[in-house]
Image (cartoon, rainbow, N blue to C red; front, side):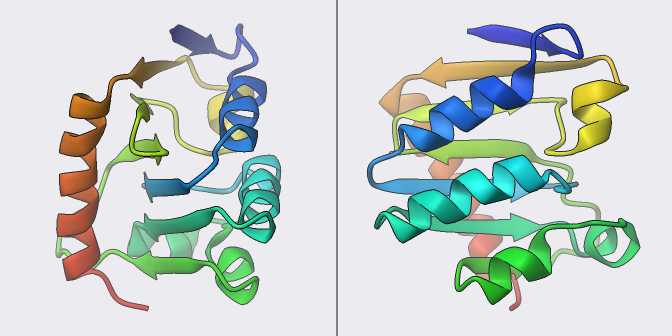
Length: 143
């Protein structure tokens, strides 16, 4: 599936995917300020889904309304990236099967203002490759 914002209501599609997660949600986020996406992830975590993610450290310190502390305080395994450059990823991996990627940050600007694109790929081999990148970033990250 391919979606674009602001035309295709991408956030609603992403929330639907998150709500269908049964085992895990891993994410790498350059910018994550969407309350709705964070709410959906916290709800899935309460239902027993493992939710963990890595945020770009510079964005956490400069974005207003960033979701890092909110997710951390709710008990999720979220971390700050540990690389000296910008971690510019916009990725979600759901149940080691579905990959969400593209230019879309997890933010209201991406949803309402910017011309963005999102690809949803349902393929375990591709998901495995994105999981490898998630694991690499996890090793470099900090709480």
